[in-house]
Every structure is written in structure tokens, then in C-alpha cells.
Length: 432
Image (spheres, rainbow, N blue to C red):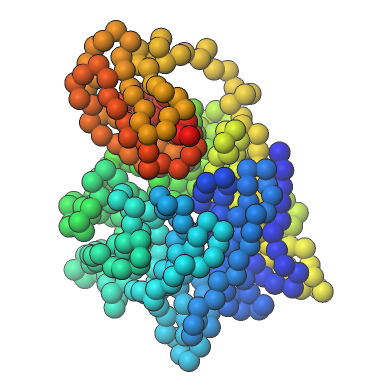
């Protein structure tokens, strides 16, 4: 372990439920309560574990707030969603979408929808989330000012409204995971176009995925009782379960694609008394390379997210409850820690230069454009994708059937990205 940090205020219950990678570090969002959750609690740390800022967000007429998601947009601002309950009518709820700047200050907030969940960044830079219209689940898209662009109702079936449990961006639109809200019924994957039109649906398994995220090859990774790779329309490509000793990876809730193409999965395992943290390093086909289990003595841990630092090390974020008693009252805290990159402990093939692999990428670092070029002058055909270190696709396009292809990077934030040609091994690109 490289470092461990606790972020909290004595006497308050402060949770961490959703984490996202941002420029220069990570942001964690949960609730702050004393005793009821009356505000959202946000914290940002850098790659070394230093707390850069904390914020408590309150909204008019909201007696109780529950965090539903956080993302960073292309301008470096943050979008946060929450479900709010009224001070005048505790049974009435509504959704809140708020935009913060990079230092956590509120730029605007909007009262929108109901029961918002699964917030994500849209393919064109807007905000997309699951919601409800009366009792019918809906997917909603908002622009960078919080204006609703479109809403699409997506009931599980004509007789069962169901709920949107998860969603993820895919090429040309979005893939939703729906549950019927009835036990023993398989979940369903529904495709929605960029303009909000229904495309297709597939039946899934009886078990829901805790997280869906984009893979650098254009497919989708799912974390739950197994790590699964899905096609962009929800068909299963492969699914893997693993065990620590005699215990399966119960509670495994998050997966992230590493720069090497390997996968890191994490979650919490209940041992009968408390929750321990589990980590699995998998190859690109989901096969186990290494695992570990961290036993904590400070109550029960909940995973909010995992990420990768600029040096390739692993960061876990979440919360611990029943921890660090304060005046004989259990303290709820936001918890962070980092593990050193396990790749250094595993046998690997010798590194191959871009030139030897047949494709060069230059200039590197790049400012406005980067160029892909074949070393023998043969034409580049197929497609290219540009991803961040969390595996999120930030740009993609077709290759021109020529020996070179220019990739526009002028609108990207400074940092490290991965370029893949037809799903091949990634090329590392640094944006100045």
C-alpha cells in the first residue's frame, strides 16, 4: 500500500458513494449528516493522497439529500446528481442536477426529473442519466447548462414499468440495463441512439451488474457477481467468476481497464462480521492474474470507485461506517487508499516499440494533432479509438485507407491517453 487517507469532520456522518477521475486526481461524492443527510459532501484528492478541497452542497427546500452520481465534463467542470426530499412533504422527492467548477464551487443547479441515477457523460459532452416520468423509467439528456435536450421512456415491458439500474455510453448512443423490480426475472439491455430513439433490446441474466463502463475496444465491461464483457448491444462476449480461497468475489462492484489492457476489479466481501476489501487483477480476457484481500478493523467498507494515477498505481475510494467513534457515536468517514501497480510483479513480454509494431504515433507529447503512420507505407484501414486511463472513449473515427491519419487532440485535457487501432495493443499518447 502506498498511502491511506480518511476525510471526515468529527461529529458528522460523511459518506463516499461515487468517485470519478478528474484532472490531477479524483473526486468523491456522498452525503454529510448530523444526523440526517442534509447536504452532499464532496472531496478532491491528488495522486499523492493530499486533500485539495471539500465542499458541502445544500439546495433550497431539500430536507434530505442522497447522492446519485458525479462526472467530469470536457471543460473540467463537475456534474453532480442527487435525489432530494422536501422539508414540507417528506414523501415527495425530486432530482437535482448541479454543475461545479474544478475547485468545487457551484456554478448552477437545476430541479429536474425524479429518482435520478446512473449519471454519465454523454458522447457529445452533455449529461445523461436515468430518471422517472411519473412511474415510468426514462433516460434523459441535458446540455452543459442543465437544459433538457430529450427524454425517452423505457419501461421494462407493457405490464411492468421496471427501473433503469445502469447505463453506459457506446458508439452512436447508450446501453441501458433495466430491471423488472420482480424477483426471478432477467434484466434487460436496451439500446438508445444519440438522439434518444429506441434501437434494440437483449435479455440479460438474473443478476444485475453493479457497474457498466466503456472498454477501449468499443465493447462494455460489467462488474457484479462476475466480470463480464458485453457487446455494444448487450450480448455476452465472456463472463468470469473468481474466488479468494473458498469464497467467491461476492460484492465485487467496480472494474476499470488499465493502460496495459488488463482489468482491475474491486469490491467488498462480507465475512460474517464485517466487510473486507477484495481486489482482482485480470488479463484482457478476464482470467485471474493476481488477487488480494484487505481486512479492516474500522467497520464496514463500501466501494465508491477505483481509478489509476498518472504513474499507473491503483486508487480505491469509498466510505467506512461504524468507524472511529466520536463522543461514543459511530463515525462515518470517506476513505481513500492507493496500491502500487501490480504489473511490476508479473511476468510480461518485452516491450515492443511503436515502430516495431508497424505503427508510429507522433508527435508525442502532442498539442493540437497526433499522427498515426505505418512504418512501411501500407494503408491504415478500419477504425481508431482514443481513451483515457479509465477506459472511457473520448474520441473515435475511421481510418482513411492511407499511410497516415491525423487525430485531433486540441480539445483534450492535458494528461495521458491510449490510442488503439482496430482494438490492437494501445499506444500511449501524452497531451500537452
